[in-house]
Image (tube, rainbow, N blue to C red; front, side):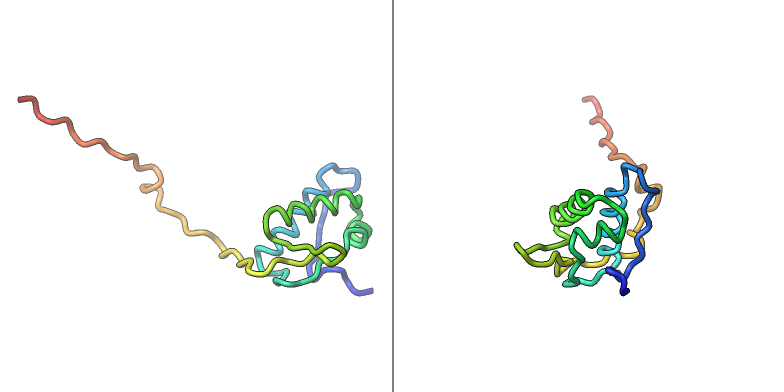
Length: 114
């Protein structure tokens, strides 16, 4: 049987309350990393729930969060897809030097008394 997604999803052990959150986070990360290409049809919630060992409600909630974040699109009666125009994130955002991060805006010196 062919895998549902071109990524491996690793979830907390069964019985954990964070399985649905972990599913959402891994799908989100895969979309932002570019591992799930724009336009890719995501599996149905029943199939995803069965394959990942989560409740269907957990799979639906994960998809709803992706929709709310603009990372996925859905049509009534159609497949949920990875949204077009989602740009993969850079490997790491540029970091400012510590001196810039800690600098404070300095006030000008007081005017000399006349």
